[in-house]
Image (cartoon, rainbow, N blue to C red; front, side, top):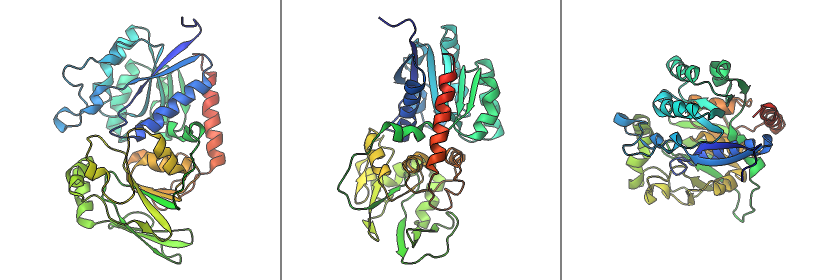
Length: 366
């Protein structure tokens, strides 16, 4: 029998096979609630099935014949996280919010963020949250907090949930040689070359090259120009068009003393030739091995924000190859140069931010 003082939290989670990075912040949300709310009974539940619909003509539309299970579960609190605040937010959530409120379920948003960060997106999402105000709103970046904090009963200028992964997962030792991780799911993989002394840095990724200094060497990355152009045209669809042909990666096995390990965050739909497109490739449908790889990498280079974020959270260097506004969740911790060169996170600052967020959650009367 349930303790009458226990409060149930259902975390809308999943779509890990399409982006394993979603698991990173799902795990963080569960950890935060279990560790900060003394009477919490926390479970994962499915996220909206609308997130499986990616075709332009039915983008984020609930599939026909869907049970719409989230409309029928009755926890005390429904928990949303990640870049849920998109232009499609009302399409995905408005019906569920109405039914959940009618049943007395409160909405909690932890580590929530936007996607485009433009005025239209903000207005669309504000209209829905004005109609259905969340009980708790913890933003994962400063702009999201500024745009929505006034709408919730309890608001906090927080960080992304995935920063808590090192508190959850202790890396398992391995016998691999020193390695760097290349994680390029949305753009073609680059070739990497070293020179033995520091040289001029490019200050970011432009004209299909980038150069930076780390470990007393100059690293130069060269992206295949034609395929890079195609990836910009096709977006996320690029790998599913080119990948099965083996045209998404390189056959480079090492750079200097470092083995190259190439990870893939998107294994659904399953295309073996795309995922294992070069030597030392890794892809799977649970997150722990990714934590193990990123936590012990000498360097992570990626166009995936959460590959970079988790590497940094373990005190390792990483660089982001993306112009996405969602990079704010990394810049939030004071590493504004993450898209210009490899950076390290200030782990003392990270500890302070994590503890402050825990203290805030512990102060909320659930």
